[in-house]
Amino acid sequence: MVPSWSEERAEAPVPADSGHTGVWPLDEHNARLLDCVHPRGWENPERPADFVYDLVAVGAGAGGLVSAKQSARRGARSALVEQHLAGGDCLNVGCVPSKALLRCARAAAEIRRADLGMEPSTGDVNFAKVMQRMRRLRAQIAPVDSCETTVKAGADMYIGKATFTGPNELKVGDKALKFRKAVIATGGRAKVPPIPGLAEAPHLTNATLFNLTELPPRFVVLGGGPIGLEMAQAFRRFGSQVTVLEGLGRILGPEDADAAVVVHRTLEHEGVRILTSVSVKSVQHTAGKPWPEIRIEVGLPGKEAETICCNALLVATGRAPNVEGLGLEAAGVDFKPGLGVKVNDDLSTTNPDILAVGDAIDRPEFRFTHMAGAMAGMAVQNALFEGEDLPVNAPSRR
Image 1 (cartoon, rainbow, N blue to C red):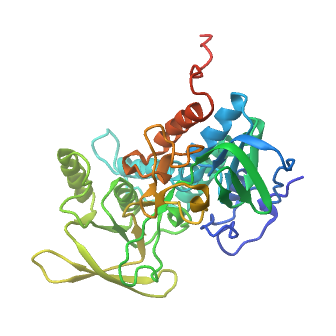
Image 2 (image 1 turned 135 degrees about the vertical axis):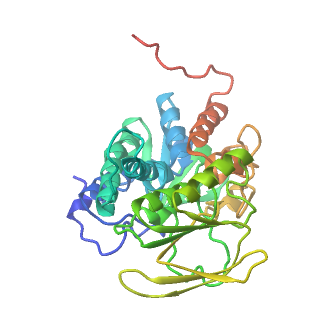
Image 3 (image 1 turned 180 degrees about the vertical axis):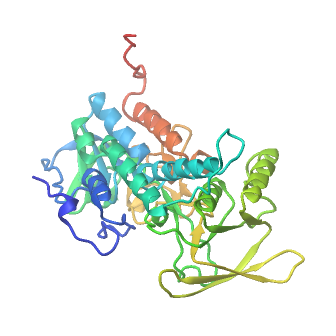
């Protein structure tokens, strides 16, 4: 019987053995989550030395889950490898927890309104309960992406770091996996800009934000893209003093300019301070309890430099693909750190037996969870079932 995380005692985020940031706190909800996505004592499959998989997917986010499960359901011998948490960013540190927070933030904002036919309230927020609710809902959803569910779909599940050792082979720990085709679906991580003092300061990214248990009094968001702005609005509605720092001339730079004006106006109306065309000179910090003092020196066009102080600093300045340390050189796969794996329109790489999908590829415009899943379906079709009809859903009985 696989031991449960509920039996473990932790004083820091777990799991801590993969080089990634784990989840915190280890309460009943996060224990249920980890039992699904990184079960303790998981035993990797035993296969004969001459066994060859039809497809191996590296990374158990949306792209890898779809690749491994769909190929298995279509009759292929497939495997899925994950070093950290199955479910990837979306389940653990992205779509699911962020939307859980946004729902609470919206409720807090609406209860304060006077135009909905109700007496307005102060809408005081119990942040600890907001985060507890998020953890409960995340754990409730987790079985869909669990290691057990992957096995039930017919794929082998490996927990460990995958490293390519050749064009058609990789290793996970002491096990060698041979494959006809492979899909790189290792996702991405928050990009932390090289600002003096930032790396040493206790900053947050999406990987650590959802581990908070207390509301920071002063909250600064570095980056005016969609992720940073939705969290800026949420934390303002929860009660933090919030400042957004954006280097471009406006927030939501790649998006429609008229829409960006509406968002900017709304956020300022709600009390978020937004500074654009900002150059961040340095970050300094002083340790303290319950919160550190973080000082950000910024340059503003036509104005004197300003020091902005906060207790929590969220870095939301873009994403970097997870392509380093995979042994892609040994596999003959061309890639560039910071950009991703070079792919053709059919998602093949410079090794025709290896494809890549999602945040790991050199197409930043496609870095969305549902795009990764859609690309994975294309990769499976192109890798194993080229020339065959696409799978269709069973007809509805309604």
